[in-house]
Image (tube, rainbow, N blue to C red; front, side, top):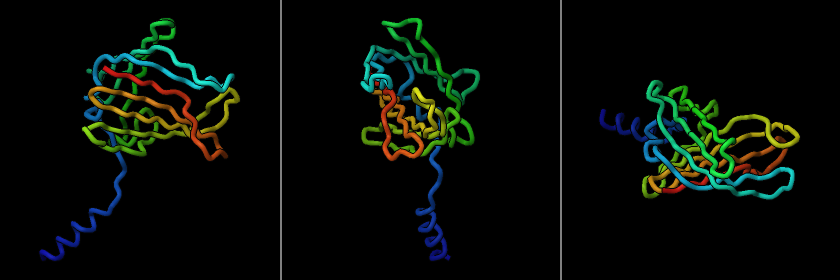
Length: 163
């Protein structure tokens, strides 16, 4: 009997489960952050960096939503807010599939999601990847794009915040 239980436990170690997220994964980044937004200007092909701030909170009425309120000190008319919902037992975040969740050194969390969409000046089909790197001192939200038929990912934009 003990040998049977040991065999089952040993086999369960190798079963891959889908990565999933919860609002708890975002608790270390709640609050206010200051930093920059760097985005790829598709017209010039060059990156452009500007100041940006974000306030991150959990929706008090719907506890499976993370709210990102972005402020742009030099362009206040561009200020915006995104409410991203966690669905399907945490395997979906903002309608994208969670493809990676990793706890790194010093308890930082890395979450990656992917979804098929449209991007670029030519509105081409692409895979859109969001990479969230989170710790108590740094928060990075990077969007990467891989156009259909292409092999390489390009960084479309990256928010880099600290406190």
